[in-house]
Length: 320
Image 1 (cartoon, rainbow, N blue to C red):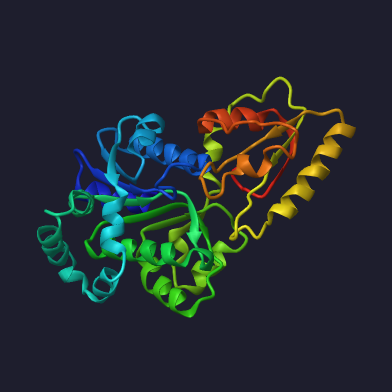
Image 2 (cartoon, rainbow, N blue to C red):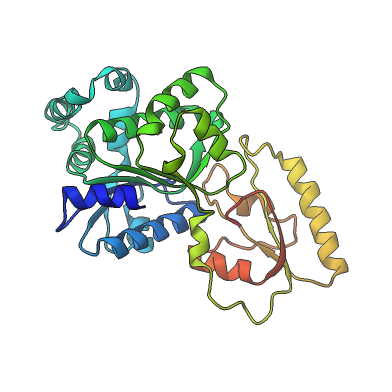
């Protein structure tokens, strides 16, 4: 993180202001929450006096998972980066971005406290960070455009941008690739959670190799230092969602097969749900099929404790 760090030190040596946009604004994916926790911890190790804001629509969950940061309303982000505003933002020259956002704050901020709060945080930032996400891909087109627009705004403001724990691609849509090629090279640092496809994609998009580092999943930093005394379970995590290309029928077949194997091995089955989002709750996908009604863990630490009890894990979720 040396490039971003040096840029930040030159801007604000005493009390830097850092804005983090996490992958999960609702904080209902424990893997994403884990990556956010690690991100906050590492930033505070670098700058103990930093004031850190996190874009979220779940301030009560943010307070539970990340002590000492303040919530920046995600609805303000949506108001700025939702249509039709991005067309104006993308056309604005860098020298006009700060005046443009100040005008937006004066014009719309009085009627939208969330927009004003988001613009205040963005305009006052010394560093803009995106913590672990896998959303820069054709499967999440709208969010990919909003993410790139946000990076464009921050970099046009002269704020160093660091993208940490990223899963990149695939990106085949020509318009999305064009925007990504224009915006991503401006980032000071991009760290990837895999080295098989992400580095090649970023190279194709014109991101200099010196800005790209493969780190793996940041959430691994939360793993306990000592292994558990007994790890004899079969772990399972299934994501039934369109982007995962797993149907309910396929999940049932997989879970039935794993239950059979576990029975033959006389091994317990441990469920490792990562997402508890209402539209893709992993625990709901597994409920009943395995003959249990295991509730999701309430924190990344609890999820890690469950994973530590497993000898082997079958998963469609990389966090598990």
